[in-house]
Image 1 (cartoon, helix red, strand yellow):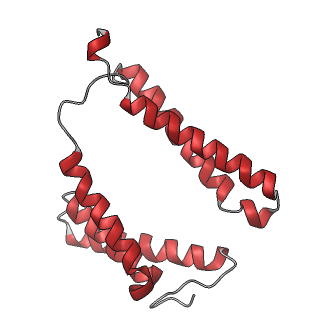
Image 2: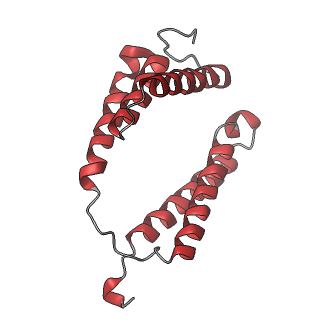
Length: 149
């Protein structure tokens, strides 16, 4: 691979994600190392850093870390960004529980899932599971439509 054939975009995104995650984690620890402050931040930071490391290892083994993408993923990315924006806007109206279930279902449909039983079951189980978890763990009330928040 010549220097002209290299694309550093993916590597820069992974490094920026890891850097921001570490900065945020260390800043949160500096402000307060209390369990309530780090209850969500620490596990999520560890998950993000693990995913970044795994992606780097997989890409290095395949030799695709600096390879140029063959097609432009913008047409695939923009609908997901729009769907996420609609999700965030709908949280106050639909509640965190229902909005999350609908977001997951719409995302799966957008990505090509056509098995309605799997789509509905996964969306309901994961969406309400996440909503229930956050309702229990966060110290402030969340707007829910169905679950008690």
